[in-house]
Length: 335
Ligand code: GLA
Image 1 (cartoon, rainbow, N blue to C red):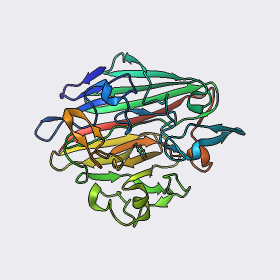
Image 2 (cartoon, rainbow, N blue to C red):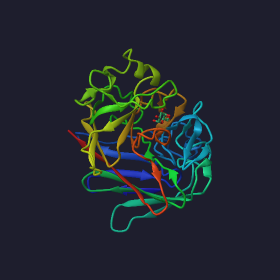
Image 3 (cartoon, rainbow, N blue to C red):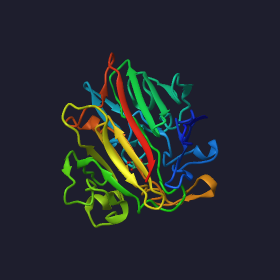
Image 4 (cartoon, helix red, strand yellow):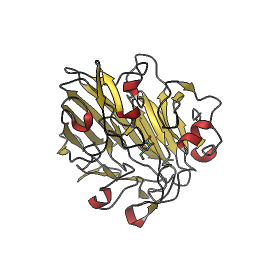
């Protein structure tokens, strides 16, 4: 386990199992520190970890339809773990369930986790070397950097699956949080939560968060997309100028009772906004807290789900000789 601290008392703990972020303690507007991520107090709590609390997800974050894709003329079959789909990389040796090598960063407050995902592991081609680093800065940012190389072409989609509750983990649902998502479009899903291929404008729908809105304001609206996902579980296409692959603001969340703010910036094309619709009282977390439906939200920066089966989506194929790099910044403050 690695503990990162900064001069404002912010403390982040992470472990080499699953690269899991165990806790994030940040001040509220009165300076009171609170832990704002769902999780467990012991390793055992994470085995198993069906909601992927705090974990790195891969080799392919989110869903691949029917557990199959074709690459360079060859068809690959993956283990299915979500109805007909493969979710978050498969069943057994997925990035959330393996032991990574941890190494403290030099010259920064952080840790780098590395993992070699072997050729054929969970059905994916190529030996994939992955490094994910967590850095805490004095500007109260958690910087997450992903890097990967392969010796055979493979799809890759890496994300971080922390569940936030800015009022404090276990402290009720997240429906009163206000969120702005910097996205004019999203990728609508079918009944298996697989993108249909459409990029739909959010305007006029309950997925319009271009101005800050209570998460709960429209979550139970009778809108097909919300009904299918039992709330928000959608991939938002982050607004950016074409050819700009730099860091852009993806989302900002504000919790009115504590004043805590979470701001997410990323180099990734999209963010999956998930409101913990599948948390169902089955998880007892820290301090005996029962994590009920919608007790946490995730902002999983990533590529679009099921991209390997959608040639029109930005590519997720990494080839030998290339290096995959992405960066996401979670910045914390209180107002
Ligand atoms: C992602 C998915 C959700 C759900 C969670 C894990 O956010 O989009 O549908 O599977 O992971 O429970």
